[in-house]
Image 1 (cartoon, rainbow, N blue to C red):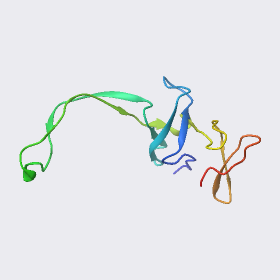
Image 2: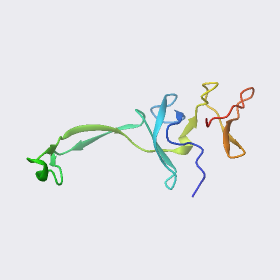
Image 3: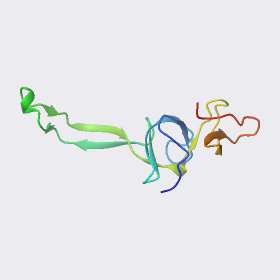
Image 4: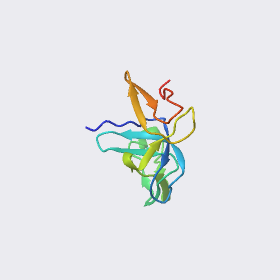
Length: 114
């Protein structure tokens, strides 16, 4: 399992693809797959049929999950995103000092985990 330097809740910037240069917050990290899901970036459209919700008839009547075109963010490889330093507000490489992530930009060097 590779070491991921990006965690849930971090702000990242896309390096490649249609959303290159845009920033967003990580809403899910998947270290085994080496992927992250970034809020409002890499959005894909899924066409879904309306379906009844499982175990809904115990709560009253049958409920139906809406159908149609559903947009949701898709996973992105960790290599295609770069962490944005909360101090200098610029995309940066990540280093470690005593198990704490630090910004590797020249002149910054601040801790990322607080």
